[in-house]
Length: 375
Image 1: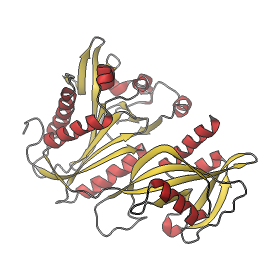
Image 2: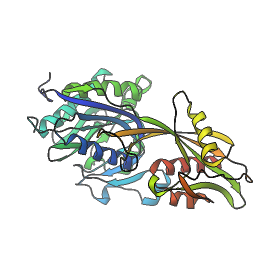
Image 3: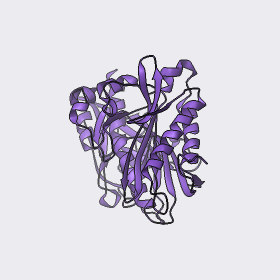
Image 4: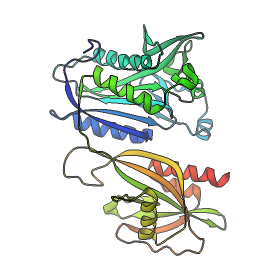
């Protein structure tokens, strides 16, 4: 076992997702941090990919972001302030984000060892694909010496509270590097940012290939003894719309108080043996009585399931992965609302629907539908 990371094995569970919207990622981290804070429960290693987002650490200032809020919104990039260390950084598709949510009490109270272990895992992952990366004094993360000077391949930013770690690392496989030019990344004005794709071209690994290697090295460097974990449940959303006289209209339904009391379009859990499309058609019929043309939106995302909304028999956090569709209904079609889950419905324009939606996934699905309708 390397002396750079930890050597005392700890039981842990691996949670590997695809896309997780950043606010959902913050909720996910808090839930897991609360879970591991109880002695005897396993640490958590979370590997995922975020939507385009700039995150500001405790040392960041608004001047670290060079573009206006309106410009970023038009480009689909959101901004969030966080409690991690460091300045501003970027997360987005093509980047592996790993959150080691660990209880460091009981002999592992060594933040430096944790940081070095995380950096070493990224260095070894880069080496697996023929890239020589290393540390740079006074500059956390991992760096590659290029003809343009040192460029950052992997960033690190942690938060510790009562020896529970949250946040973690971001390793660049093939993100949009142009987005880094819109900020002062990690506070450096004289250094660049690179990715495996920018260094290796067509020889770069896929996100999953790189994630496999990073996962293995993180497990080794943090001395994690991986235990079984409950896989995410699966659900679908079917953003239901019709052509109105003033433009597209979205069907919004109000959940009853015992089901959360928020507005949404059609959603439902997949049953054993169903395809996502079959689930979507079944839920549409059961919740609204509507049929129509179902189209995939190309969006799948995962999130923590709040136990105050859905009750579970034990304390282990639960997660769900949702696959998103749109469904066009005929303008004259009658909605037959299933009354046990929703109390009322309305058809509304795209902007009003967006304002009524509570969750990031619903808003992202609506933006995809908006883009399709405008193209």
